[in-house]
Structures are given as C-alpha cells and as structure tokens.
Image (cartoon, rainbow, N blue to C red; front, top):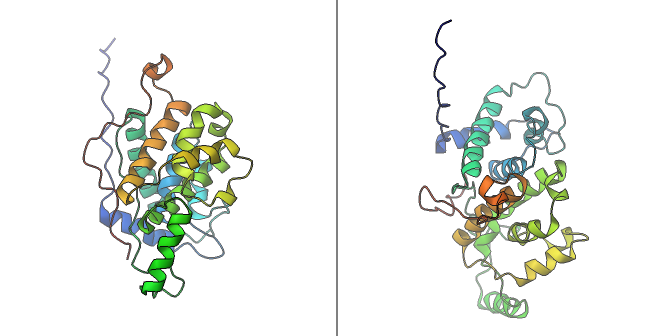
Length: 257
C-alpha cells in the first residue's frame, strides 16, 4: 500500500488589488436594468453579513443578491464569471480574517466634497455653518459628515442579515452591542421594534472621524462572529471582540471615480 501524501496547506488567499476592485465595480455597473446590483462598498458589508452566520450560506444562495438586491436572475446573455470570481476572492479574504479574528480593511470610500447636497454645490455660508452648529448642539453632538461614507457598507450588511436571518435569532443580548456599532449609521426610523438596540445606540459616543467609524465596523463584525461562529476559547469564556491587526487600519480609501 503506497504511503499517504502529507496534507498540504491551502494556498494563501490573494487579496484584490485596487485595480481589481475597480474592475469589480465596472462589472457591477454593467449589470443591465431593471436589476439593481450592489456597489463594491455594499457588497463588502453584505459579504460580512453572510460570513457571520452560524451556518455557512452556500455561494449559490448569496451570489444572486450581489447582482440584484432581490436576487432576480441575470439575463442569459450576461456573463458573470469574472464578476463572481472577484466577489468569491473577496469572500475568501474576509472569511480568513474573520476566522482568525484579524483586522480587515473594509471597502469604505471617502465621499466627494459637497456630496451631501442634492445639487452637489454645498453651502459654505456663515449662516449655514451656524445652523449646522446649532443642529449639532440640539442633537447632543453628531458624527462629522465624513462618517456618512460608511452607510453603503452598513446597508449591505443589513441586507445580508435580513436575507439570511439565522444570526438574528441568536442571543439578543450578545447581538445588541455590535449591532448598535453598525446600525447607529442608519436612520432610527428604519429600526422597527428595536427598543433595546435604539437605547444602546443612544448610549454610544458618535465616532470622531471616518477612521474611528471604520474601526467600529471591524469590531462589530468580529463581535458578531463571536456569536455566530464562536472560537473554542470564546465558548469557554475567553475574551470577545479582540481585533488582531496584521497592519495599520487605513480607515478609508479615496473617493471612487
């Protein structure tokens, strides 16, 4: 009987380059109407929402939702091979980081100046600035406008846990803190029947800048992984939500073209 071959470690995951990320966005942009594909930031949050589930979500179940939020089928003429390959590589990269409770760099992009105004012109008048300051005082202090850049990522995550709700059926007390770190970036009116979650959100200090907001995304994801995909030391009462950084947090990327 021939000797058995030694087990080989799986090949390392190859992270997507900036160019490949742009290629992925271009491929998503080519998805024909009336389908409504995610953008790369939403896709990234969506993948994290898929990956923290207590049981693995088969690729065939989540892949249709990146090319259409409702999961409608692509037309037969549309070749999604390259798009799916890039998305699966990012999935593998995120899965490796989450499994090891390592830092990962969320795909969050700084907003272009003036993007908060519908006409894109912005309003830098003194009256406008004074009004903004008054609004902040009345609200007890708000996050700076740049933090709005995390909204697509959080919306993608929320889409995933709505489509695949197994995580949300688990220990509500353990879910509240990390969900608050994420859902504080959503409109409170969208959080129905979530009094405990809203109370937790109100207790949080708003992030000081975009980098702090992005760090909150990573911390929340790993805390949720501790609930849905606990490591042995967590099951035995070990520390939760610790982020091992393999590199410095970049916090954001430049605005997309």
